[in-house]
Image (cartoon, rainbow, N blue to C red; front, side):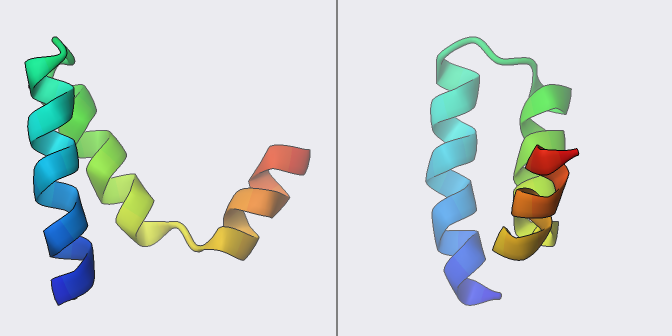
Length: 46
């Protein structure tokens, strides 16, 4: 959990500074933590 938190905070800050909506930023950060690499590969093929 600590590793993902260390990555999520700077990514969230960067996205908001670039002009992304807070809701969009929150959704993408939450989904990035919840989706594993194998799931991403399967979803990409679909």
